[in-house]
Each structure stands twice: as C-alpha cells, then as structure tokens.
Amino acid sequence: MLRYCFRQEDNEEALRTAIIRLAPRYGRYGYRRIHALLKIEGWHVNHKRVERLWREEGLKVPQRQPKRGRLYFNDGSCLRLRPCWPNHVWSYDFVADRLANGKKIRLLTVIDEYTRKCLSIKVGYHLTSNDIIDTLSDLFIQGGIPEYIRSDNVLY
Picture 1: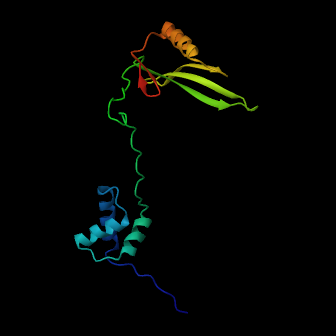
Picture 2: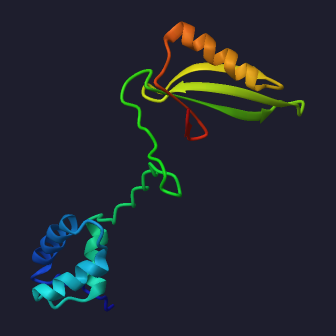
C-alpha cells in the first residue's frame, strides 16, 4: 500500500525563526504581510507554508484597542475637564428603569469622577429640579463643595 511520506524541508526551522522574529517587530501584520517581508528578505517560500507555520506557532494579530473618548465637543468649543483629585469634578445624571409591574422609576445618581465613588442615589417615580438641589445641598454639607459639577457633559 502506498502512502504519502511527509518530508520536512531543510530550512524549516530557519524559516520558523524568521517568522517569529518578524511577528513581534510588526505587531499588526498578519501572515500575508509577513510573507511579503520574507520575500523582500530573499526567501523563496509559498504563502501557504508561511500560514501553516504561523498557525503552528500560535501567532495571531492582536485586536485593535478601542479609541478613547473625545475630550472636546463637536464644535470644538470646550475641552472636557478631567478630574485631578477628589472633590474636583462631580457628575449627576438620571437613570430610568421599569419595575416588574411596569411602573417607570427614576434614579438620580451623583458621583465623584476622580474616585468613581457614588456619592448619592435618590430614587423616585417623579424627580424634579428641587430634588437635584436638595440632594446636592445635602452633599455639600456632608462632603464639601466640589470645584465643578457636570450634568450631561456640561460644566456649571
């Protein structure tokens, strides 16, 4: 019975080390671009062979990192202030949800942006501007007055 006998090339290990050398140097390149770089270096190698060695070594192109949020408004008018110490910038916002019985509920959350500490959560079916003022005034008495207060990305 005849069977195919796999024969390993003489330069297999040298090619493998060349691929491993190029992969971290060009971090976002996949096996196709590495194959092109190998051809530039003078290697006469098939792209399928490079792909096979690439997979055997477990090499992968890393995922792109998400871009950071912008620190400015669309019209370019104002930079968003980054907090530098506790009680520098506080933020408040409303969060809405529904209960199991279908009633709408609102939450007023106030956080210190530097420490990411939740300073207050006020819950109610109907929250008004007076509730915001009462909550903030209570926080001013307890923890001092912050330098800036942000609501919906607007500084006050």
